[in-house]
Length: 555
Image (cartoon, rainbow, N blue to C red):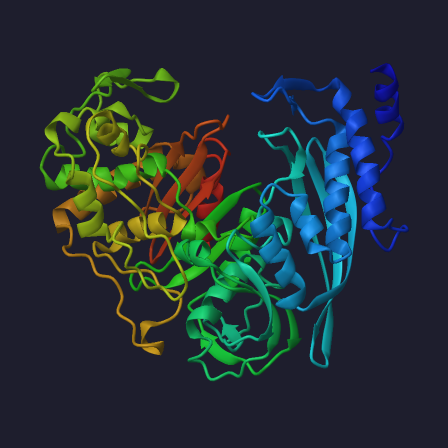
């Protein structure tokens, strides 16, 4: 064991380089090296004995095993030996299909793979290749990573297979294809006629992909030749759009005008950039026009397609229901106990606070949970679901804004889960687009489905709410939201925004996350906005400044 351990230590060199940077051994000879190499690494690992008395490696992977498995895979892939590369993974069938298509369908050649930093079982690597289609060629370069896993059946160290290994924009079931795109490119314009590009507005990359999918064939353009990610069934179900990776010929773009404001979009990009993982949406309440959308991360549009517990911002919808049922008024006395027991669960307020002799408005402003949960015995399981659907247009999966969206979810629940839904936990799921729409609906009293491209462009039908809140209910909602903006948990962020504004903060606990997701939604004049900072902490301190800054721009 000592000798083998010294061999493993001696092999701990710098990053492995596969391909053009060093000479690559023939596959047959290479496999011999890997077998010897792996044997040395196995000495420090545990073993299990199968029914046939064959020893099976168990326990954590050694550095040598990770290096051996990753090098075997990358070398075979680069050399175009698809069967050998696929055999180095834990799903040879799926790997064979995608790796074979890398050459045949994606038309990629001269592939050079360079391994980089290894962190535990994860190995980063870079890819350089040439996309070639008829007489057209373009270079391709990107970074990816793989993770080595131990196969339970025999303990072998193999590359854990997912489509993202081949390209980070792929999801399982997606493919890479080079050819005539089928969908013409578009030139997207802001509301003032300026061009929107991902280079200028990084958050809009996924939005532009969605606009092309929806309007490319209708906008009058001509398709070009591209290397594209073509989405499979699972990705389409998740409303992910095809994505262009390399354009070999541009084609002729059609023109699509959006509702985005260049000044608000610029500011939104700047504001989310101050947080590690933030998203924000700005709307015009009187029409539903989307004026800005931004995300810190650019690979997924959390602002439109995220599915997150909204925490206490959901108390706006809950309060609407309570006011409409005449169960409470803003100034009615309504204590908020430190704890409340419901169906075997004990609910707590933030920091175990309580309001012994206060009004409902004070509990709303302080975001005191149990002032809402204690109404659960007076409610039917479906009441909150109906309120969200009928007044706010949420959870019906029928919004048509011009690009893919998740339209919120408020499932019918019972017992403690129903109580948790009242404070935006349990099964309730929203995103900033949904919660900006909630604030906008309070401001106008009427749900206007948000949209990014005018319905007149393609004649599509927008979603409607089946009923409208009463003027009395709207007045009560504005009362509690103004109070929150002036004296409650939103006061610091909303300072100086004036009387024609209202807000609600939220903090949503997430399993395994040290800090909650911080939410903030507000309106001011003819602007409404909502934002979330994931794992950021309280919404008033994290998402609040983002939203308030954008509302101030409304003048």
